[in-house]
Length: 132
Image (cartoon, rainbow, N blue to C red; front, side, top):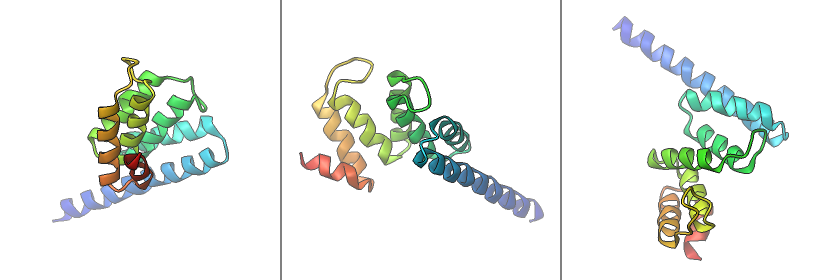
């Protein structure tokens, strides 16, 4: 009983630290302190905050605070989309829409499927794209 209680307390502590890193990174990102934002999103990602992983991929895609790397961004978006982080699905769909994936080919069918998955998962910006 005590062991379960201690494990629960540890898990809550880990979640709070992860959220602190995510919140700090978000503030840094909004202040255009991209280098530190990337580092803190990376910490939060490693601590299990999926949205932080997606934010890292966005920063890699845009070259914000880090060297631009579409291939790595695509891998992260795909992994996060497979784990139902729906903003990542929408961003991956954008890459397919413009032929920015590793195969450099536009894929309208894949784009629509990713936008739909993202919208169905509750990521509202994707819902507008599904209509197009």
